[in-house]
Amino acid sequence: MASAFIIVILGVAVVGVAYLYRMLLPTPLLNGIPYDRDYLHRPFGDAFAVKSQGQRTHEPSASVFSLCRKLGSPIVQLLLTSLPGTHPAIILDDPREIEDILLRRNREFDRSPMTTELFDKVLPKSTLAQLTTPQLKAQKRLWSDVMHPDFLRRAVAPNLQTAAEELVQLWTVKAELSEEPFEVSADFQSTALDAIWVAVLGDRIGVLRHEIAKARGEKASEETAKLVEIVRFAVEEGSGIINQGIGSVWPALTYFFLSLTPSFRKFRRVGHDEVQKIMKRACERFYRLSETSTSTGDEDEHDRCAMDFVLRREIMKAKKEGRPVDPTNDPTMIDELWLMLLAGFPTSAEISEADIPLLDATIEETVRFSATASITSRRALVDTQVLGYHIPKGATVIMNLRVNKQPLDVDESLRSETSRAAQAKRTRGGFEGPSGRDLEQFEPRRWLAQDATGKEVYDAYALPSLNFGGGFRGCFGKRLAYLEMRIVVATLMLNFEFLPLPEKMAGLEAWEEVFRKPVTAYVKLRVLEG
Ligand code: HEM
Image (cartoon, rainbow, N blue to C red):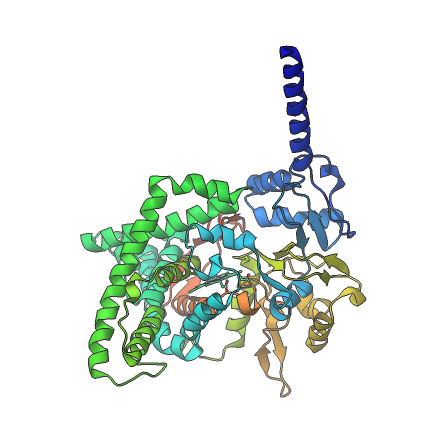
């Protein structure tokens, strides 16, 4: 009797293990999209192979899209498990079709859970942690005006200019101390942190001033040093947590374990407290103003940053409706502000408005070439088609935002109507024309054209520009990032001559985490006389 029982148990165990093993094997979609047959009979399909290639090269996105080149198709399937809840994942590496999906097919594709899950544990109420819903649309509307060109020019550009000038001071001190090249990654991070903090929250943290004092051998203020340390911790910890989710094949599990660690809890507490303190001060200012001001207008001279703009509007609206309001306790507000700080951290008036086509072309080419963000994804909301293949509702389409190789050939008749119409408007032929040549080379002039009078102009549409995504769920901070690059690049060019570097310091290798960053970034400078 006992042995029969053991045989039954063993039988059930064997069937259970066989069933689990079967579930770990991939089931490709029956829609003809190519896949890597080498991984058809391996548990977890090619997910681990792609992940380990990414870890080896430090370029995870490139390892995902290398599958398209390997199979010679701009659209391929990633083989995943057949476990319940696993959605088909399709990889797309065709800039024209990606641009079309992002910009023109918002009814068919939305932000995918692959992205929202990464931000859900870290900043749950932020835009990036949400699929498109009526509530998210209202949240996006509330913030949309803070990226209006007029607001950026009036309130944000002067602060960005100050950060750029402080970077010039820092490099001048360093160049005067030694004629040797020096590493500048940390200086760009300090500039980006100062710039994004003041643009979003209006307060100066003074990271660059702190670095200038250190470079001059002066004693930096203890208060600034403490604040810089807190802010650096929160920004770096936040990016690090998201990065661990990106690197995981099971982000939900990784986040579960991370959420138990003291540094995760410290990130949530410190981040929350620091931003809340700054919000409290701004609210007090607006409560005082609301006693005297009659303005309920959309723009106000008292707004110094993105946060001011939204807080003032909320306070004025509540006052008009005669209800109390305390935005400092609104977790949506705090998470959204933190998302902007984390998103703006890697970005590196007159300058902001001057018409200099070659400057714009150089910035666009830098954005393309550096590919700071190389990947995004969308979820199919309906059964649809991409490049002639059926895409089932619920499938995730993972898209390459990096345009550094001639795209693979595609039969024009397989493209969507809107994609063909967009190509027809590219008067200089897009990839087929001069702008599409030598995409492995840094060549700003690909973004220049001549207008009807023969004048050289910047052509933002010469090629699909994908590094900020696009459409309704495209990057919210794109204008701010371009403005910051414009001001910083122009200010540096006006103050320094950049001398040639020894070959070993001029490498272009990158390290991709949430964003791609250079492995090393050196400069050798000659300070230009005023
Ligand atoms: C070089 C700098 C930056 C790059 C390369 C970048 C890139 C991106 C990309 C690729 C996306 C996803 C877009 C898509 O899926 O279509 C995104 C989303 C987003 N970015 Fe940026 N970004 C940068 C700077 C900023 C800044 C400065 C801010 C804010 C101040 C910002 C705020 C956001 C937000 C809120 C979203 C989510 C939008 C949504 O889901 O609706 N980004 N960014």
